[in-house]
Length: 81
Image (cartoon, rainbow, N blue to C red):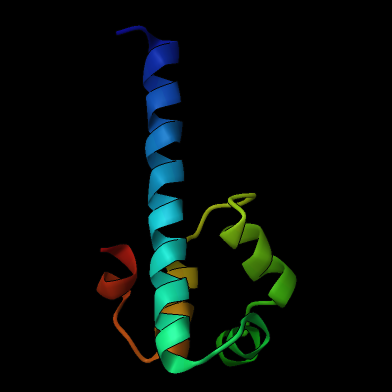
């Protein structure tokens, strides 16, 4: 496997993980009946930044996961499943 192929694979894995996290967050939001604006207020992450993460424009970081987990009253592990 070439170096460029390995980088592409890493990016694909990161994108897949990002999509899974987004799906998990949206699922928990639906269960808790929380919209993006409410999540922004509870997490301290702006609605525009949440939207960028939900649309895979930027990736989640560990701090994001902790803030979202606290706002959604769940564990970070639940966001990563």
